[in-house]
Amino acid sequence: MSAQGKIRIGAHIWAYAARQPNYDVYPILNRIFQDFSIAGLEGIELMENSLLHSDSYEKVSGLSKKYNVPVMGSSFGADMYIRSQHERIIEDAKKVIAILAKLSARDLGISTGGKDGATKTPGELDIQAEVLSKIKRMCEDNGMIMNLHNHIYEVRDNEYELKGNIKRIPDIKLGPDLNWLLRAGIDPFGFLRRYRDRIAYMHVRDESQGRWVEALGEGDFDLFEFKEVLKDIKFEGDIGIELAHEEGHKFVRSMGDDFKLSYQNLKKALQLT
Image (cartoon, rainbow, N blue to C red):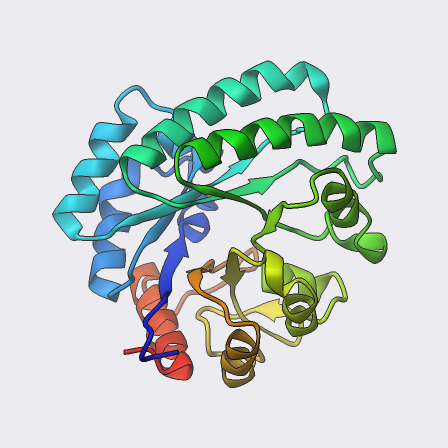
């Protein structure tokens, strides 16, 4: 795996967004790119709201070049099971995908929207599949891969929604969040093995005794078993470190240092050069 060098380790910006009004990191993008550059990260995964400003392309492309941090892709979330939202969703997706394509990004991670703790009906999954299929085609037309991200709602009840999406879009790719799988009661490594042919991307973070730790490698996530799983499934693609912190967490390092430590721990475990 180290000889091939086909795994790129970047990071998602959620840990910053969680502390910003409306989760919009646009005003602090310079800081984030600088932090990721110092951390040595090989890419950045943005959120769609940072790509929907009038000058998003100019700002993001400029920062990417300045700090030598490639844009791997973006997450993209909306209530896709509500038909009345589709027109807006498609317009936003067109803007985001166009910018990502110009930045040579390859990953668009989709969150379909939770239903206030309720289970989506088969009809709602049909509606959801309509817009997912359109976004998937837009990604493919621009040389990108759409993947289904997960929180808990997508995989609870024996992976009800996930399986429903796969039934309706048989060739759909997955971008699992391994920690949310764990919190849903699913073995994340077993999940990767079961869906090995669909895995296009993934998020990793760490926890200890059910609480998120500050950096990857400081909790119970077995990085060395993770390496073996990636080898077993022959994974080639991007991995996004997505840090998250419990409410009221007392930080012992800066956010940039947390990402640097996380990257170093993961790179060492995967034995990537």
